[in-house]
Image (cartoon, rainbow, N blue to C red; front, side, top):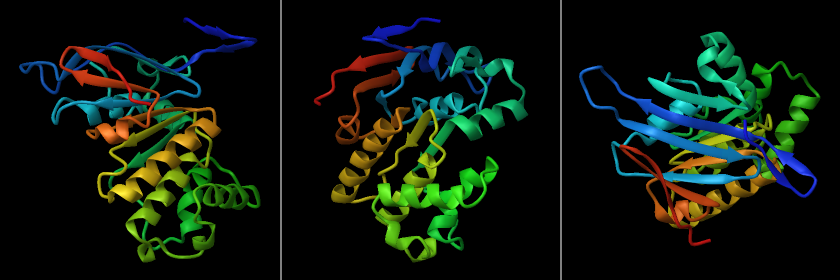
Length: 237
């Protein structure tokens, strides 16, 4: 596996896609093929593309929620195809954080309980679990809402809960699927800035799936998914 040298630091890719392809049935053309991508620690990459080109499918492959037809997905150097379903689930639980457009926040749990869920799954106990959940709530600016129920929050507040939950276990890879699609421009700008800052602060890698050029321009690199691979698009940053 290739590495890069920056001063005295050596950084392996957090995620690497090698010649990836995916089709839904053998008698239909591939959704996409020939997809290559390498993302290293501290990188925040946006993936754009037309509707139906397979952006969400690509995200599912990155997370091990779906299997490739050919090519490889490597997360922290581990080829997901070599793992059984249980092992993929454990790796995803430890190393991946998700931010979804639909939020998937549990309405009858408190904000703090929602944020602590990934830590529960990893077996982290109090007081460390509570401390880390409250630390993330402070980072996203909603520490005062810790004991409120999610059903009582605004859309922008719920999205901050979703970001805090995605990052609370300090994942190596953060995947965001249209995270601002339901927000107004002002809230979307705040959320995108927050997501980028937190990925950088955690020295992880971030991949943002979006149709919005405004959202994509918050990334370090913009890639466009097409039927025959990913191509780079110049960022305005």
